[in-house]
Length: 201
Image (cartoon, rainbow, N blue to C red):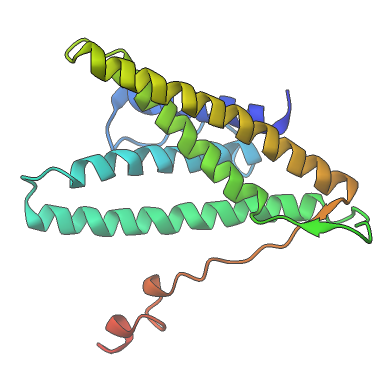
């Protein structure tokens, strides 16, 4: 099994495990050794699953504004954790390919491996929840048919993304592409670069 397919298996297992409790406050039970790539992939997908459901909750039109603000700040923290983890995964790949001799005609990719893997994790969540809609018994056949059509597109998109990720990793392995890691540098989370925050000091 190639890397992207293996990652997708971890994502599917993570999402199913999250839905055992289906609780955004449930403790994350990492089933892989600490410090491994598998543990990082699991943690990444768990964060995505929690955030998926936080995004559902905050869209309740009757939500208390104080609760909504607390949720928004929790989502912001989650986004930062997600970004940090993606960069950690990219650091793994950068180290992995450090010794590869890069060809003179090598090119750079538009996104790093970990950001492509990030999209694969989100796709796994979309597929899980779209399948839920297809299987709902409390809605119309038209709704289920529409969701089935969307599910088929998502499944095709996942197959294409898995292929593309593995092709990218193969290109890194052979030196046809070279890897650079750019930090996201989210300024609004930094008290020294967000004028609303540093203006209050």
